[in-house]
Image 1 (cartoon, helix red, strand yellow):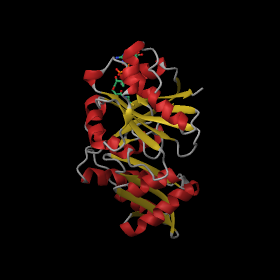
Image 2: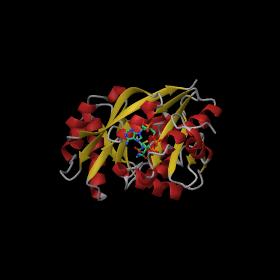
Image 3: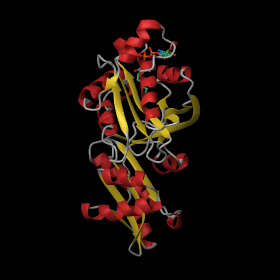
Image 4: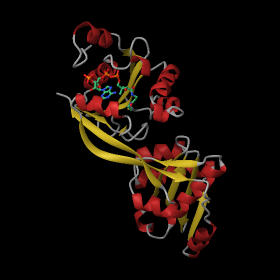
Length: 303
Ligand SMILES: CC(C)(COP(=O)(O)OP(=O)(O)OC[C@H]1O[C@@H](n2cnc3c(N)ncnc32)[C@H](O)[C@@H]1OP(=O)(O)O)[C@@H](O)C(=O)NCCC(=O)NCCS
């Protein structure tokens, strides 16, 4: 195992030599993540579990320090096998500042290199990802990867929608009906058709997320599916959603979004996270969502 960069002598070698594969210890890793990820304490075990059950064709591993006080989850991109991802990095608060973070990143890079990866990104690997990048408030993590030569390549954000204000759709549904558009809650028997639509119009990642969603609504015109929205692929998360290009501008997306949010509220949730947002103005205008979590995305070429 490569010695941790920047550490000298025995300390670095001991940390690096003690790192081992821990993909079978998901529950313990979830507890470690909950202790380390203060902004995500409640969700951390679920995030680890989600990263540990990605689509079947993903190559990934969890590497942990000997005392199980540090972990990194890493994976190869599903879209581009020359790209690898650091999906989650956590060191227990009592074990920080002793080189574990640095050694874990080095170990992940070594694993990725052996998998044929030439570029490492600290950016979500869809569809099973924890965050789009490093939450800027996890500043030590940003400092760590910058000290290792990672370059900031972009910014992403999640939005939050308040659910308690109520999101009614009755008028919108009537207005759309007058234009020949019908809105439906997806029953179990409809899921396959909706998933096929998502795969055809967008990609396999979104189809996987739509398949895993708790709730899903879709729109039809002349018997054809023209839009969908889903929620609950992760608890309290909204998305993905999309309207076929030919049906945009009718208000279909706004209605499907509000339908999902109303259902999330009925399920007992008080707010929805809209992850890795594209259309800021759409979500702000349609449901008053606000940009909240901001993430830096990083990359480093392995040489
Ligand atoms: C980020 C984290 C993993 C670092 O773990 P660690 O074991 O303390 O890191 P190391 O001891 O290997 O530190 C290596 C380098 O990281 C940077 N770093 C670590 N802690 C830092 C801090 N509090 N402030 C600024 N830089 C810091 C420094 O560059 C440090 O090198 P230096 O000591 O030579 O300056 C740890 O703080 C953590 O678990 N944070 C919460 C989880 C998190 O933010 N995960 C990111 C989401 S993926």
